[in-house]
Image: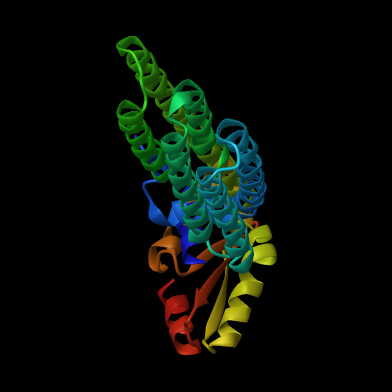
Length: 328
């Protein structure tokens, strides 16, 4: 609850700073906010990762037919088939792990990175045993880089590290085993650099787009739970989110939960005498007073209706609650 109030409870003039992104990685600077974002998209990430790993594993094994066509039924063909089978097994293991730990945010990242590393390593064997098809390998390499950057859900920096390291290894390997002219080497290298550049730009834009969407959704959610005049939580927040959760938490540990109701006497007379604008100023001033005496990110201030306010004070016993009320 504390993290939720920290991120959704301060969407006023500082909202942009709350959602500030790291320039290169594209993640939220605030670790708690990044964790909330990852948790929010976890179900979608897991579903997309399952499909991608299944498709990649199947295609990796299916391309063993190209090994047979190029090498015949040889020892090298068997080695490549076993390597492709390892990739398929790694993909199956990744699917199992994300199903085994459905609430884990780090497990999908681990599974994606593991399969990417295993898949790229197996591809290096294909290059070694089929050195006469460098042009085809380069084309396949470019496709695999796009898959790593855009189609396998992973942390951007992890995907980039795998892609760049594999590009360097592939380039060095082709220089060693391939009979390429200088123009072929330059062209292949430039295409690989171009693919990585496009992949990095597209992946970062994708990361930014998801987080901008999350920021917009969070802002709308915060507006639906906040009183526009005072900035306090509204009645819907306490009825839908707060009270049941705090009562359940207080019962589980157990711990005290104190609720204080505040009412401004003769408020109608203020409106009648000085006008509603003055009445609004009184409500705003009183809301600031309530928020000042409350513990930040622990206690909650709710405008219950009109001139009525509630203070929800977790882990606060009766005597402490009375002290807070008397201070008011």
